[in-house]
Image (cartoon, rainbow, N blue to C red):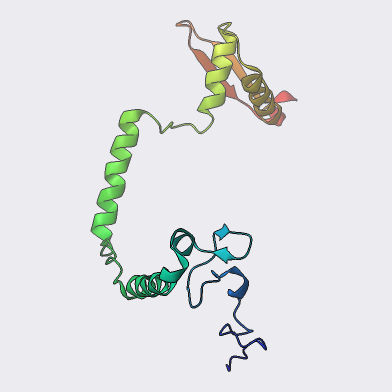
Length: 161
């Protein structure tokens, strides 16, 4: 694509999408960050005296070149299947030790029901969640066993008659 330059004799191509955001010091590759009233400058040109701007611009161009030429850090080698399986097994062991893997996905609701049945006051959020759960699971009977544990029995609508 051929660049068309502006009619005022500047060196900024008309098709440069960054043209309005660049520092106004001649040739500076940085975006402006300081509006000094008469022009918008990058931090480096703002703190330097105007007679030093060509040196500052050259330093900024060299820094940009150095960043572009920098070799990125090598990526970690991909894990083998055995390493992945081993990592998952180790995570399961840690999760089991923390007790964060309930065998029953509805254990949270049953725990809240047990607390409510024992007379423990639930928060409004807990009461709302429990009401929503019980609305979707109406065919569940909770009974207290002889040891004080809550027992759950599930039955279908057909059992209701």
